[in-house]
Length: 73
Image (cartoon, rainbow, N blue to C red; front, side):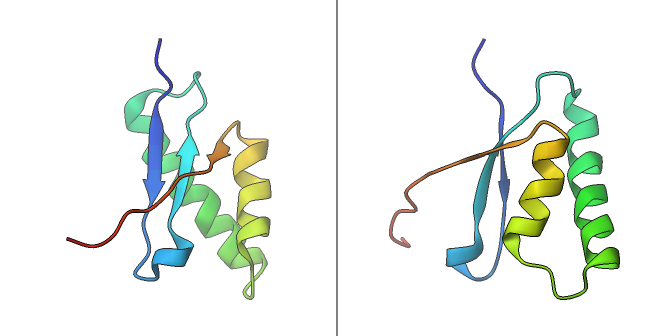
């Protein structure tokens, strides 16, 4: 089965992230799980960095995937 992926968008193109989703999450649960993780990190670490958020997401089974962002069209 192909891996399911999710984009974490940002107005700043250097902050866009691509994540491989954990297999044990249903499609409708993934968005809620990711937004919950972001909210927890924002509440506990007001000046958080991407690494802080990724640590929380990795604990939940998400994996960061490298990608190449193409030019705007």
